[in-house]
Image (cartoon, rainbow over all chains, first blue to last red; front, top):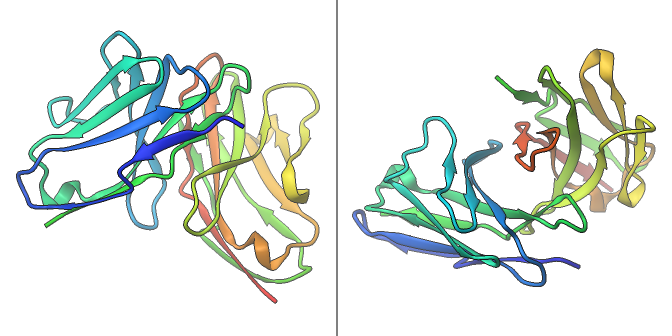
Length: 115
Length: 113
């Protein structure tokens, strides 16, 4: 079935570092992908909608300059956490809808830890 | 604003017990409804979905959910749980004609043998 691959699965880095997370749809094309953030014992919060070939749409309260999203192809979206700080430590998850199958397919997530 | 409420944060059951997890949503228009499951160490997987038609939907692994429009609810049920059902369960809503998902806070289910 359709699979979404997310890389890396775990990142540990120093404060001030920029971190890029990739989300790939492996056997289907995704004009839209979604990025979520999940805090411990909390729900997934939608951060932004990644649109292929155009600007991402950010949810209220999400800093566009902090969380840069690029959707350069129909199978790849990237989320860059710029100048990351400890408060950015979280679990980041991407998803993509499969037009043939409708529901979202989720990546395995990236656990980001900023020291 | 759109929101999804899951009232049970942590449920502990013995095997063979019946399960019902509550989900209520707040949205004025037509919605699509989902239940996702996240097994330990794994990604979110779709359990079942409701778009239209019969409000009682059946999903994988013996799960079912009933959409009650008047109550804005979409409760998840299973007649007899198994130890392997131990997981986190998320209810989600998607406004009609969008792919955007709004998740509930999740319910952690623990099933003991």
